[in-house]
Image (cartoon, rainbow, N blue to C red):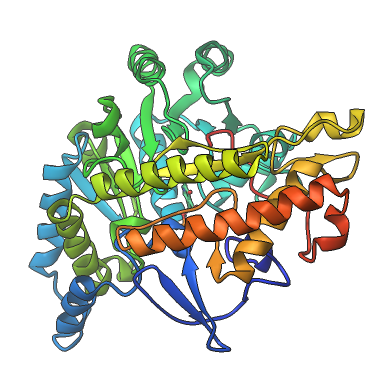
Amino acid sequence: MSRRPLIFAAGVAPIYADRAKGSHIWDVDGGEYLDFGMSVSACILGYADDVVNDAVRAQLDRGVMYSLNHPAELELAELLCQTIPCAEMVRYAKGGGEACAIAVRIARGVTGRDKVLFCGYHGWHDWYLAANLDPASLDSHLFPGIDPIGVPRGLAGTAIPFPHGDLLALERAIDLHASDVACVIMEPMRSTESPPEYLRAVRALTEKRGIILIFDEVTTGFRHAPGGVEEFLGVVPDMATFAKSLSNGFAMGAVVGRRAVMEPAARMFISSTNWSDLVGIVAAITTLKEIRRRNVPALLRDFGERLMAGWNQVAGEVGIAARMYGTPQWPLIEFTPPVESSQEAAGAGRSDSVVGGGPSLARKLAALFAQEMAHRGILFNTHPVHSAAHNDSDLDRTLTATHDALTIVRDALHAGRIDDVLKVTLDPPVFRRLVQ
Ligand SMILES: Cc1ncc(COP(=O)(O)O)c(C=O)c1O
């Protein structure tokens, strides 16, 4: 889903990659692109980072899995415990969805309760998709149309979404399911900063009710602080899950948490051969050290601030109703064209909206912008992801292309010719999240 051609500009942007380095990616036809996807945000240091790759290469020659444990497994655990506020004990995984499934299993095991209240996206596993057994709760929470084929019907009613930012709604959900709730698992924030007081209130509420609080930091990762959002906002959950940027694109995940909730996991059957794979572990140790050494959160903030300021200035100069907003570590773009009809009015403010069964004008403008950026060798959509490898010349190139692309969008809009110049394929919005 995350790499489908429609993510950038289907029909214009390339589909298959051949190689990538730093902030750049080459397609199978030899075309070079500046990438603002960074492998679904996993490559926080940039593609094929020399330091991480050297460490992994050195490990390859010594073997990557043994019949015995390896001290690097402990080294990573200690590093995570030193870095992440809630971390006193650690479990490994190979990806984000898996880490969330482990965390939920542990929470259920510790509390002896079945129900999970969640907010955001947490992967493909049965516990999560159970939300769609009856009724299809993910339709409004995440995106419509996920058929929970293969998910046991017996899980109906065990996974219940709650909206981000609405403390009363969470309180009501907890009251409704009373003593059956094992945990609250949530993306603490994404592109727009959660007010710390909201997360503090969630923390206090879950603590009061004896419910385990899990922050899913798979995507926020280490973009805001070396210790994750919990360090950035100063709200400490019972457990947290990490993957993606943990290992700069190598397969790795981790569940970390307080000793009181993690220790009982030793009595639960949670085990896999590949969790000890030293490629992922060495990549994670090296990535975590590099994030700190290079002060990656500050680099991401600085680049993002200049990108946002530059982009908004260009949009103003071109004279188009569009803005880049959100956190500099993970900005968003929104086109707000003049309302042309009541149909468009409903979706004009959202670049991902569908109106009356077809894409809204705002979505078409966003798609045309992505199309023109792709024509200029830049993979860029309404939620661009930059890395520590994005540099000043990347920024200049992006803003120059933005000027040209937005000018084309503006002219097409004024001439009423959007449909004529739009060559990309548009599908219904797939990935709408409550936590942006
Ligand atoms: C917040 C969050 N949790 C979990 C996942 C699932 O991670 P993975 O794709 O590594 O299984 C994702 C992936 O996008 C995510 O954004």
